[in-house]
Image (tube, rainbow, N blue to C red):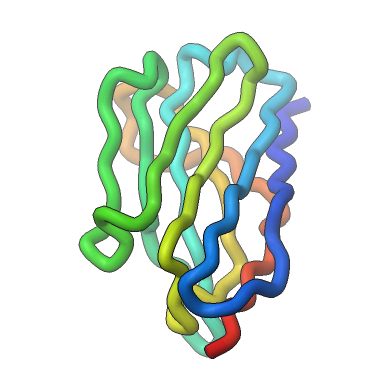
Length: 119
């Protein structure tokens, strides 16, 4: 049974930093690309950042480029999202997802962690 469990969300002020973590179990972690997505109030879920199964390549959305960094530790089966210079518009529920290397669709999702940024 595959499980993705996010943690690290909370209430912060604009300009603060926060690190989210996603712990994976039930899969061969180093064969799965991982991604972070978010869904703000009244909005659709949107892509934030992703990292290949080896950690060799990363991508991020323009809205977070230069502020958010995705990383992974294949020895601990975790993926992290370091978020700096947070803005109120970053307020959302953040989800991690797993996609088998080379495939297009994320197959597994966590339950999400709330990030609220006050102005």
